[in-house]
Image (tube, rainbow, N blue to C red; front, side, top):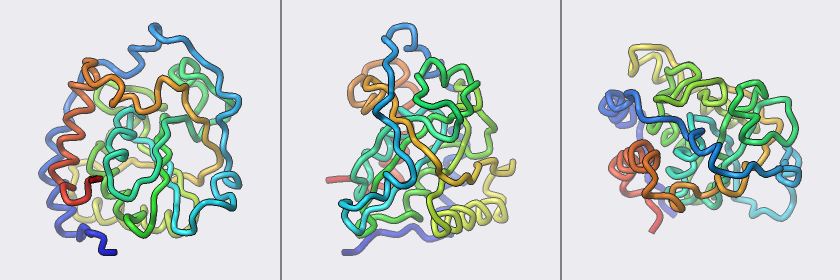
Length: 235
């Protein structure tokens, strides 16, 4: 099966064109915290061993990415051909079974992330990461638009040396070619755990398309993704 690849040169040109869109956006996704009942996540923890358990198709792989509000990252990757499943959740912290309210304090050390399971016969780590760097600002430290705090940091939780090397190569290319006026601050961190977020966070954009945050923040990211990766959308 042919997979459409984005060359380094065309990828960098695309990024030059989109950097200007990363301006301040409306209020953070945390605005819904007081409107929703917090739910426990005691059964939603996955570890390194569990995410590679026997039974998954041999061509499947998983990446866990933080790039601001997890609603945004989730919505983008749900549209990419080859992505099997996307789950919003929390990763990188020390607190077990954190609630959304706890993560929003910034004290759990967790980042809001999207855990992406994908089919390597249809897409790749390289493509997943190029989409990731296209739809968020990797030079913004602990901040995406009005979403501010360490929980909104740009981070790649890699599962193996291959994922780490591909991520490092892309970051080095972007920095060496001065695609951004500031250096990339995306963290490369070994994956250790993932806690699935509360049910009301899952597939949030598709469930709340008319909400102000979805229309003003998420939708422009989706439109950009659709334009740049138009040949890679799910049918």
